[in-house]
Image: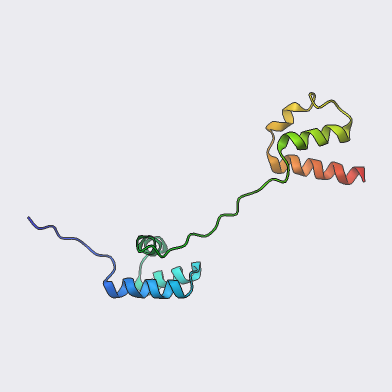
Length: 109
């Protein structure tokens, strides 16, 4: 019993996708290729990934300069309040704590 497989991209299209993308691996290139072949961007990305040429965009992880506990410690020092009183502030988000700390530093200066 023979099974029919449906191919979304011909060999020529696959070679063109790879060549064009490798020449300029950008989101705009993927979008242009999708438009050229009447495919979705997701389909083109999947094909390029299957061909092991797609490079995912680097994610910029938010890196804290201080730990939350350190921020709370500095806040307690600026406010002249025991750190234990402000301990629950550690449950706040890092960016929120940094905003409070920055504001307190500026007010103190």
